[in-house]
Figure 1 (cartoon, rainbow over the protein chains, first blue to last red):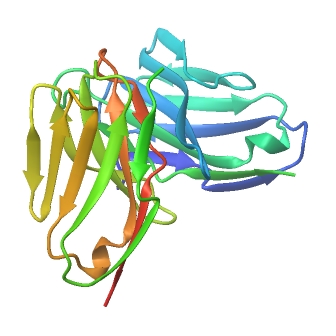
Figure 2 (tube, one colour; figure 1 turned 45 degrees about the vertical axis):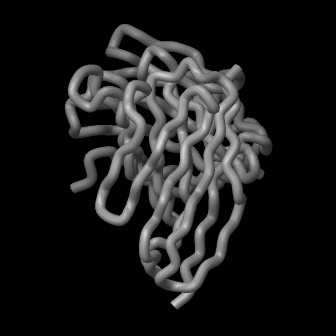
Length: 114
Length: 112
């Protein structure tokens, strides 16, 4: 089984709809992240969480919200999706101590907003 | 604000060639630098992590170097194989050690 899983893997939705992307990890890591990837722009950080009680905005948090339901679960919500949120979304985790910053990524969710 | 640039954007080589991918960054106050591989439809896989105090890291046919003072890193791939075809991403870790700034990647194609 994969260490970092994301659901759904693909999603097509319409403008104005609420969408939730979910991420689960079995690595026991404290830190979790959400990124989006766009052609020509690379990966950009949306939100990150260092533990269950800690949520931080990243580079491009507008239009997004997150929830850290447990150490192993970190979900990303688009309250009212718009077409320019069409992108590939990645969840990642890292360990605060052992790996000194190595991040482990999920397989990604391809989101299309029509 | 940290900016990361990767050159070239795309590279096509015949099998067996040794090749170098380049990464440059604007702020030398980094915690670490990572090289990732991304395959279509899959997530990113960490290849090598270089701490700011290190000069290079090696794993199999891969060797990554880091020159903080000049803001540069290179990924050297020896004896390239078709299975090396993927997009390679460079990411710089800020001083807290967890936030990464990514380059746009180099798309590598190794032809049989």
